[in-house]
Image (cartoon, rainbow, N blue to C red; front, top):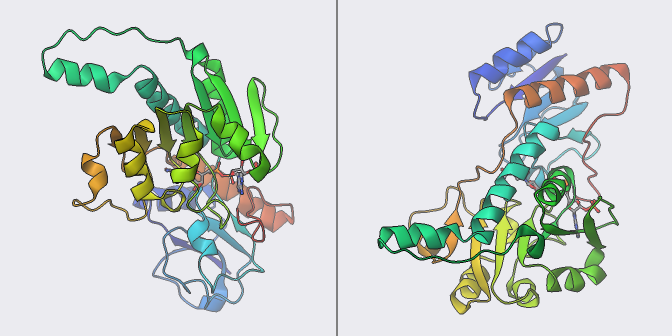
Length: 309
Ligand code: NDP
């Protein structure tokens, strides 16, 4: 029995070599050298066309090469009786926390104002509020959002969090469920999106959500493109309901050159670059789950297919 690796990551061939070194007793087959589909017991894959996993009738584990799994769940041919696991760890989440902290400070300290003033050769002094007066609301307190919220607390921001189920994080005012959403938004000046993409959270970054935040707010989204109603974001920035946004994930990637986001004032586009699993994270996470599968132990970071994340 063998492991099929269909790897589209920043690390390319190096990841395949590292996986071989980490799992010397396993037979690893780099896609498309699949061989007999009945011999494929584990598949590590990220980008794939719908139905790709269908021919592997003896699969015992599917591993994403990253944290996102929404495209697996969108595949009607996904074998639902096979465990699906993700690659995540503290280091991966730490990179995301860095991203959010960086853009929170960018908007809080109005870096765009100083950059624009310099281009005009203008001495545009302005005072700044301390972080302790700035309220940052983190939607999603999972692997990424939990650590991000803690990082923002450590930096001195007033942090609130929103999740599906109650979460307790020291220093974070927590809200949960639809019933807690309005109160969460009303006190949120900088809104950070790190939600899983599910039918309940699709389109959640919309006019109604922006309208419940205090006027002049900011949105930072590193979740998924499906969370964001793009025309509502543009309208909120034009009207001043929002004064700024940083968006990392889009409905269409790469973002096409003619997309209005590139030129919307107040909007910063980053190319799905907020965080990536390091080669070590990917290898260690996958090796541990292969070990657990072989030993009959519970797998790490298993996706709950009914819950949708
Ligand atoms: P997790 O599955 O660990 O956490 C998801 C969070 O979303 C949980 O806190 C969960 O609540 C919350 N949630 C789910 N449904 C709802 C709902 N209906 N209402 C309120 N809260 C809800 O995911 P990760 O932290 O690993 O990833 C977060 C997001 O970031 C994902 O969309 C992922 O794809 C994206 N991502 C993007 C990257 C990039 O490069 N741009 C890199 C890595 C991740 P609860 O805690 O109650 O379960």
